Image (cartoon, rainbow, N blue to C red; front, side, top):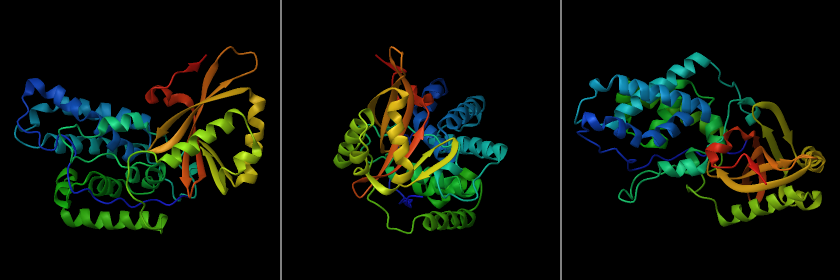
Length: 330
């Protein structure tokens, strides 16, 4: 597994934290204002884009159904987070699946990517320059996958304390528990993350670096026109490839080389650059022999380390619409 960064708690709040005195006739619009950040919250909790969407719909329905219980003048954002978190906890209790270990992403078959184009929608508005943005250290695949190791309560506490920036008292209020309980859960959750990542935390950021963009461009060229020698120079010798939900894991270039060589046998490839979980990604389209167009085939998410590709996580094309990617290329 790649190193997992232990996030640092923000010192300020995300958009909507000060929303007060929301008129009931504007209630639906006020809820929708928080939709994207609530979806990101559910995704961090559940590790699945689709599950997060389903649970968020349930949470928003609960909020609308119980809108009369919201007290004007209280914190709407905290109220919505309480409802969304409880919906996530209910979902986790129902699905009762949690990996016992995490040697690779193959142990998290429900893991899905999150489009950066949607993460940007959770960014602060121009009039709120100090609001929290979705940083890489709390959304990258390694962090999301490691979250799935945690018991539900620890997961919720870690997200609210370290990713969102709630205080211990605020977190306790949202979870309807005590500050000592929150502090204890946070300590255990952080210990799990530290066990998964003994190396120092990287510098938080939200976008791709110039080196990552350049590496992605070269990866695309060598995927469209396979060259084993040049691709070998682009990746680490110990590169890992996983393909959730398939329980397969390829370790090392020796295991990956045959896959790269066999790609041309399936047909002609075209790739489009994109990004997921604040990581470089490539949308892959295949024109099979005899086909007229290039059909959406897979999404490769790359983890870059020391200027080389250290890991490729391959997903199916089901989320291409969420990435604003076409289903077919001419």
